[in-house]
Image (cartoon, rainbow, N blue to C red; front, side, top):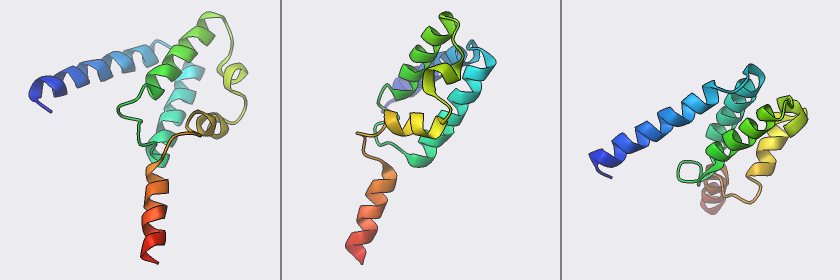
Length: 103
């Protein structure tokens, strides 16, 4: 990864954060909680994938249609997040597999 790639990545991340800040406050709160959850659980493809930008797309559509964020995702943010990554490999799974091989 070269300097240009790093600079481009930062530009994309800043643009992404600007989109998040443009969301209504309730959407921003749920997005931030989702982001924290994903950073803890660690889906392997989080950085390279489109998970976070897909959530912003989904939230922008919901906000544009006048729906509250909980109307879109339900009352359980963790369940919403789990459903999004149910087919993704996580760093937690990789760690558990490594630990079970050591035992």
